[in-house]
Image (cartoon, rainbow over all chains, first blue to last red; front, top):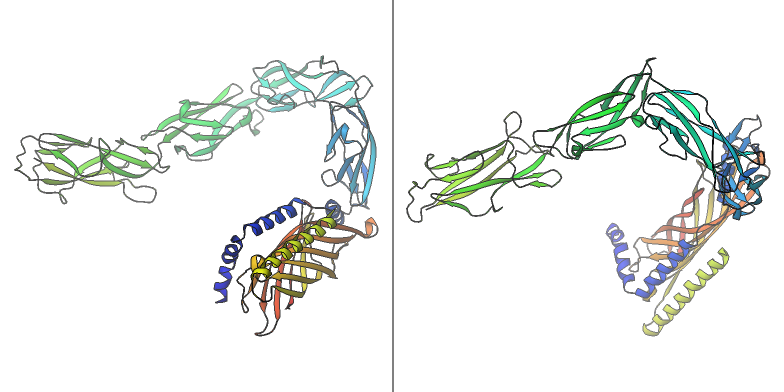
Length: 442
Length: 192
């Protein structure tokens, strides 16, 4: 009794409340008002104090820095916490950062990003009640020169090389500054996928020249001296593999991996540096490492996927099949399934509509279909005068002599066969068979 | 700001309630239109922050007024005042709830009858004063966290013919990106 009542509490309540639209509006308005109030209180201070209890931080300090940022650039500040044993930890993400003059920029997790205005401000970082501040000058110093820095002057082909650059300004300082990266020589063997980042992606051996560029306050482009990078011809083999079976059905997807083997026998995933192609192109789509089967056939379409890098290539042959059949249905050429009949001296063309697992259909499915007349369910008939071929064409000879109103009922059966010429099944294990009754009339 | 909001909400609810009850009184015959409850509950809290969980406990006093006739049938107003029972400690940090207050609009089954289990939804505003004390960082620090609060209440009569009820309430008192405060309390309620 009580449990029944519990179940009915909310619907009944809603029903009763529904009687008063004004009341519902009042409650809705009240709830929205409450939610809209948001939260108040320095919850970050609570979280920081709990964090400090775990990492033992008792002191904080800002890591030494220039104290300058360019009005077009940014400056990464670092808040370092230390415990009694002077073990340090970076608190950038946990601290609360504030600027004395938000019109000069914004700060998130210690990264000050200038807003394009010049001035001086105070940056304050707070953590668990501890506080530290520093002055920051947002300067309009003019870009004077750029120099490219990198740890190495050579890289293996089909590998990436990372570059950094130093921007020198007319006040003698080097500041973080927005730069773009360009390959000035050897664009066919290496490129920067993102010009804002100094990550060079190589695709073949040779020599490339790289420069970093930035615009000074007058809008003139300042370029670094070209940096020459040798890309070693060290790749000896590549392999292309899929994480799924090579036989795919339309809609299936798989992840491709390209592995390179180098002269010193070390291997590396070089997928990002590899050029992938497929033939025929419309049979699959390739997005990043994901390959998806798009257009197959009942017998299976061979698709050759080729990965190439460093002058080497490897092919992987996939077979793309149509989706599995969920069911079949026999219809006449007009799509009808009821009261099918054929008169003596004429033909009836039957077709199969196949429905696939994605609910798409093929209204003229012909692959490996076996047609027959089920004599055990049909009236007696002369096999020489009534025939059914393997295209589904039911022919009744003009020599068939039916008297007035005489009819012969035939049960026509269609079966989809598998590669072993057995009746195929759908994904649920059901036989792919259909039967239909056709009446032969005078 | 939040005090003004609380006062405004109370005033709004009471004004609306009074008006609706006045309308009811003019059209309906005699009868009790309001019911009052007072309850006391021991409340177990769960405070999650910075990957840690603390469970200080509270004693909550709850008082509510609820309409039992007319267009406001099943709707009430509840005030909550919580006082500390015990704190919780982890990693040398003591965390305590020094004080808690909340006000809720309560939505109960209008067809509630004596003997039924009374289920209410709570929608409101809560203010929780937390005190943290980590000796390595100095003295204790109090911080009041306020915001939207919601929950539910289940009450059932202790004994036939008596106005005492078991009461079980759960609520979320605060939640933002840094701190989450939840609590469940068990106690006794008396209906007037």
